[in-house]
Length: 133
Image (cartoon, rainbow, N blue to C red; front, side, top):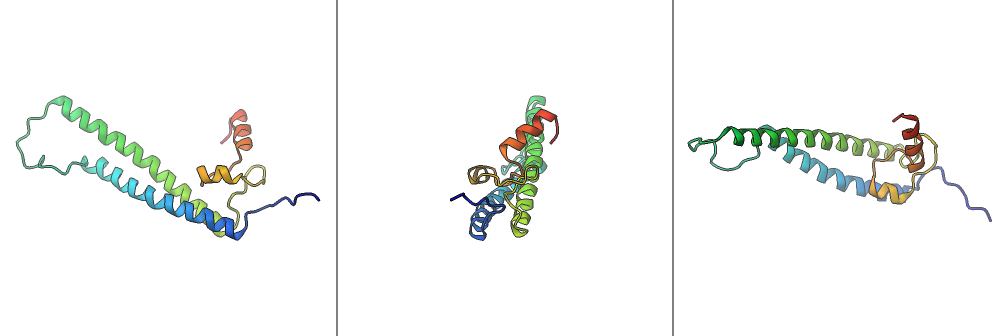
Protein backbone atom coordinates (compact mmCIF):
# COMPACT_ATOMS: atom_id res chain seq x y z
CA UNK A 1 0.00 0.00 0.00
CA UNK A 2 1.54 3.30 -1.07
CA UNK A 3 1.83 6.02 1.53
CA UNK A 4 -0.41 8.99 0.82
CA UNK A 5 1.51 12.18 0.14
CA UNK A 6 0.15 15.03 2.21
CA UNK A 7 -0.03 18.51 0.74
CA UNK A 8 -0.70 20.25 4.05
CA UNK A 9 -0.62 19.65 7.78
CA UNK A 10 -3.79 18.60 9.60
CA UNK A 11 -5.71 21.02 11.77
CA UNK A 12 -4.37 19.25 14.88
CA UNK A 13 -0.80 19.62 13.63
CA UNK A 14 -1.41 23.27 12.78
CA UNK A 15 -2.75 23.82 16.30
CA UNK A 16 0.46 22.33 17.72
CA UNK A 17 2.58 24.68 15.61
CA UNK A 18 0.35 27.62 16.52
CA UNK A 19 0.98 26.99 20.22
CA UNK A 20 4.74 26.80 19.63
CA UNK A 21 4.72 30.03 17.62
CA UNK A 22 2.53 31.92 20.09
CA UNK A 23 4.88 30.95 22.93
CA UNK A 24 7.93 32.04 20.93
CA UNK A 25 6.16 35.25 19.91
CA UNK A 26 5.37 36.21 23.50
CA UNK A 27 9.00 35.67 24.52
CA UNK A 28 10.30 37.50 21.45
CA UNK A 29 8.10 40.53 22.16
CA UNK A 30 9.35 40.66 25.74
CA UNK A 31 12.97 40.54 24.58
CA UNK A 32 12.24 43.16 21.93
CA UNK A 33 10.79 45.56 24.49
CA UNK A 34 13.80 45.05 26.77
CA UNK A 35 16.24 45.67 23.92
CA UNK A 36 14.35 48.79 22.83
CA UNK A 37 14.52 50.07 26.38
CA UNK A 38 18.27 49.56 26.50
CA UNK A 39 18.74 51.13 23.09
CA UNK A 40 16.64 54.19 23.92
CA UNK A 41 17.52 54.77 27.57
CA UNK A 42 20.70 52.86 28.22
CA UNK A 43 18.83 50.35 30.35
CA UNK A 44 20.18 51.72 33.64
CA UNK A 45 17.95 51.78 36.68
CA UNK A 46 20.46 53.43 38.95
CA UNK A 47 21.03 56.98 40.19
CA UNK A 48 23.15 57.93 37.19
CA UNK A 49 20.96 60.89 36.25
CA UNK A 50 21.09 62.49 39.71
CA UNK A 51 24.65 61.79 40.78
CA UNK A 52 27.69 63.88 39.85
CA UNK A 53 29.14 62.70 36.58
CA UNK A 54 32.76 61.61 36.51
CA UNK A 55 32.48 59.61 33.31
CA UNK A 56 35.42 59.22 31.03
CA UNK A 57 35.31 59.23 27.28
CA UNK A 58 35.80 55.45 27.40
CA UNK A 59 32.68 55.06 29.56
CA UNK A 60 30.62 57.07 27.08
CA UNK A 61 32.03 55.03 24.20
CA UNK A 62 31.23 51.73 25.91
CA UNK A 63 27.73 52.95 26.76
CA UNK A 64 27.13 54.06 23.17
CA UNK A 65 28.39 50.75 21.82
CA UNK A 66 26.01 48.82 24.03
CA UNK A 67 23.12 51.04 22.88
CA UNK A 68 24.06 50.44 19.24
CA UNK A 69 24.31 46.70 19.82
CA UNK A 70 20.95 46.71 21.60
CA UNK A 71 19.45 48.66 18.70
CA UNK A 72 20.75 46.15 16.15
CA UNK A 73 19.54 43.25 18.26
CA UNK A 74 16.13 44.92 18.60
CA UNK A 75 15.93 45.27 14.80
CA UNK A 76 16.69 41.56 14.36
CA UNK A 77 14.15 40.69 17.04
CA UNK A 78 11.52 42.86 15.30
CA UNK A 79 12.14 40.98 12.04
CA UNK A 80 11.82 37.67 13.91
CA UNK A 81 8.50 38.83 15.41
CA UNK A 82 7.18 39.79 11.96
CA UNK A 83 8.23 36.38 10.59
CA UNK A 84 6.42 34.61 13.44
CA UNK A 85 3.31 36.73 12.86
CA UNK A 86 3.43 35.83 9.15
CA UNK A 87 3.66 32.15 10.15
CA UNK A 88 0.46 32.55 12.21
CA UNK A 89 -1.27 33.97 9.14
CA UNK A 90 -0.12 30.96 7.11
CA UNK A 91 -1.58 28.71 9.81
CA UNK A 92 -4.93 30.48 9.52
CA UNK A 93 -4.75 30.12 5.72
CA UNK A 94 -3.75 26.46 6.12
CA UNK A 95 -0.64 27.00 3.99
CA UNK A 96 1.76 26.74 6.93
CA UNK A 97 4.60 24.28 6.50
CA UNK A 98 4.42 24.17 2.71
CA UNK A 99 7.71 25.04 0.99
CA UNK A 100 7.23 28.14 -1.15
CA UNK A 101 9.64 26.77 -3.81
CA UNK A 102 8.94 23.03 -4.03
CA UNK A 103 5.39 22.88 -2.68
CA UNK A 104 6.44 19.97 -0.44
CA UNK A 105 5.79 19.83 3.27
CA UNK A 106 8.60 21.17 5.41
CA UNK A 107 9.50 18.44 7.93
CA UNK A 108 7.99 18.85 11.40
CA UNK A 109 11.43 18.67 13.01
CA UNK A 110 12.54 21.74 11.03
CA UNK A 111 9.36 23.65 11.83
CA UNK A 112 9.73 22.94 15.54
CA UNK A 113 13.23 24.45 15.45
CA UNK A 114 12.50 27.23 12.93
CA UNK A 115 8.72 27.72 13.10
CA UNK A 116 8.77 30.61 10.64
CA UNK A 117 10.55 28.58 7.93
CA UNK A 118 9.07 28.85 4.45
CA UNK A 119 11.58 26.60 2.68
CA UNK A 120 12.72 23.02 2.98
CA UNK A 121 16.43 22.61 3.61
CA UNK A 122 16.82 21.34 0.04
CA UNK A 123 15.09 24.40 -1.42
CA UNK A 124 17.16 26.72 0.77
CA UNK A 125 20.39 25.05 -0.40
CA UNK A 126 19.22 25.20 -4.02
CA UNK A 127 18.49 28.92 -3.73
CA UNK A 128 21.82 29.53 -2.02
CA UNK A 129 23.62 27.92 -4.98
CA UNK A 130 21.77 30.13 -7.45
CA UNK A 131 22.30 33.23 -5.31
CA UNK A 132 18.58 33.86 -4.72
CA UNK A 133 16.76 34.28 -1.41
